Amino acid sequence: MAMLIYIIVSLVLAVAPLLVRTERASNIVSSLFFLVQVASIALIFILGLHDSVMLSIFRADSMAILFHILMTAVLGFALLHSSSYLHAEKVTTRSYKAYYTLLMLLAVAITCVYYSDNVAMTWVFLEATTICSAGIIYHREFEQSLEATWKYIFVCSTGIAMAYLGILLLSTVAEHGALDYASLKAVIESGNPLYLKVAFLLIVVGYSCKMEIFPLYTVGVDANYAAPAPASAFISTALVNAGFVSIMRIYTLYASAAEVFVWARHVLILIGVLSLAVGAMFLRRTNNYKRFLSYSTVENMGIVAIGMGIGGVALWAAVFHVVCHTLVKSSMFFQVGIMRHVYDSYSINRIGNYMSINRVGAVGFILGTLVLLAFPPSPLFLSEIMIFSEIVSEGSWWLLVIMLLLMCVVIYSIWSRTLRLGYHSSQDEIHLSAVNRRLSYSAAVLLAIAIVLGLWQPEVLKSAIDQIINLN
Image (tube, rainbow, N blue to C red):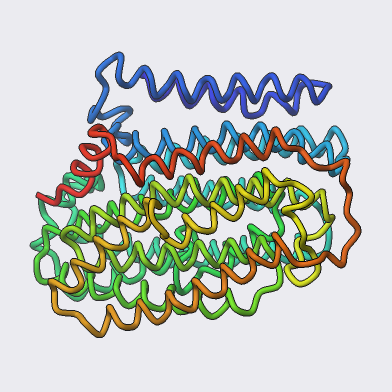
């Protein structure tokens, strides 16, 4: 009943901006929507709903709650930054209201993915995220956004269709049509190994369009490029996390099938290495800061996939890496959104001298880069060291060498472009009136939280990750 009330209230608030007349009213509705997210998380703890089944298809387990908290945090900042961004873009009231409606509907769909306890319903809610994201991608209504929108719909639909075929194969082990994860986990070991291997490959490749890993990572890059920057921050974190959660649930499901699980882990390692290679290659070639951050997401999710494939301590590190990446990457996208209106451009080769123009934003972006590159006290340093140590203990030196070489390319590519933004001369017109230091400070809050996690990990977070990776 609690989940039903949450969905109804959230959907009503999500569509409410379409019914009001002013932008101010839309802002009030979005604030109420954010409060509903906060209240729903609080009620889970107050009413003791942890790990309880709701409406037969939802479960409030540790993974769902943790990522819902992260999504809510990013959503709050996205709503705050969106208002300033849209006013600077001088959008119509109609577009303003439609944007907020789509962003909130996307948040509802993502939340349902997090809490879904049914492999088929997870698929349904992921498809719903495609529809909501497509509207946001087309928000700016220019030729490239239309192209990105159609590409996103086509590739995501293809990926989701592949995942559906995988679910059909996976359902061959189901007893009495039970597709909840617990029931499938109890019987998966008795399934046909060939069917299970093909099912895993189809599902992971299909969901790669959401997690932004190889091979369907391209739609995420184009989506983040075309969408407004605050929405890109949400898509590149909350939606990517939805893809990760979906794949993670399949991963833990396969842990009960020992023979197939080894093969599945090798698949994740291969996909992770390819994602890391793609990120390293395109980070050197791209000339747009939003694409630049998107390829960084591909690279980081590649590291996560490798951690999942290695298992052991690396699996814990992979989940921790996703959590901290959410905070860092959203902060950097928000900073880029502020930068957009100062230069009226995202061009890496043309804009610069940001340190003299907006010192707060420049310092926030440079520090974000250092954290993203896993320099201590970055929390990503901890997760990557844990993954490396597990690789060494496994004796996979070839994998360690490949990762280190590719990450050297990533470090050079990212750091050189960050220095260009901060200190090189700018060739574009500068709009000093567009500098908003308050928003720059607010974006830095998420980065500060990430740095704290690099120095100190709360027991509640450690316990949540321990429960998530419990494969027994």
